[in-house]
Picture 1: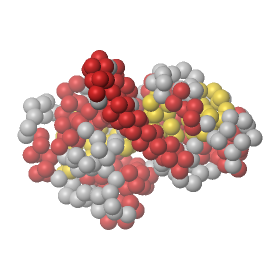
Picture 2: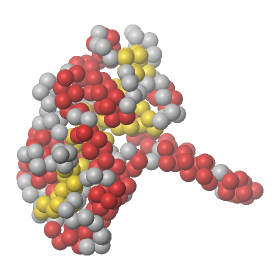
Picture 3: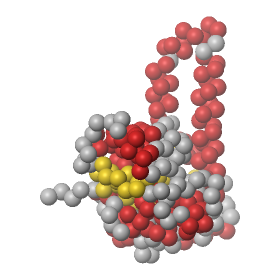
Picture 4: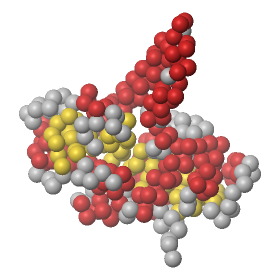
Length: 329
């Protein structure tokens, strides 16, 4: 018989918790073969669940009385709030009661908790946060997008290997192109970190295509781009802000005066573009290199993002990516 995959979800994490989190969980069990374990405050969860009709055998409740907020120091919060929805959920994964964990809560607390509670795959120097950046042809997988601000060249080599395994098995991209983020395309460009990382990546069996400048990423020149978390998080936040600003500026221009008729005609194509840049379509950023998958959903996630994050966890588990990463390293 097919094994039931169980996904633990932090019902109290995020700007719209528990309403949107629980709505997304209900949508997931209705649309896919999912078993969800909601973790959170009892009354808050039961109040939201009462609004829906669903198969009660597919949603399990685990109660946790505390919530970790975004303004708390991550290490202190994880250590002191043992009965928080995040810590309880991570322990479900550690104890093999759940296959993966999704949270839209504090990024720092989640990454800290995942590292110390779930633990690393043997041989992994540093787990890495990956983010799908939309590009001209689909998306580029950015690693690291914020988990490791200071890195060694060996870390970047491992990020590339983990990203390559993830993209190949999750999205069916054979022999994915891997590039190193740098200030120029020439091999000799960059700082000591990127120069040493380049040498290591050249010696791997990856499809390493060399350096890539950030301006080339939106054109789909690589499937996986690698950098330290400081650079990656800067790229990610600039991309987020720039996309919102550009779409807003275009909307302002075509919805005034004699352009209004044109705006009506362009509504559908612009809607398609907006969908391509919608983070909810992906669900969340996977934290790779752990013994089980942990997904960081955006703090402002709506139900669609949570549903897709759960789907991501199911596909990851079915593909046995943890074992594949361990073999690759």
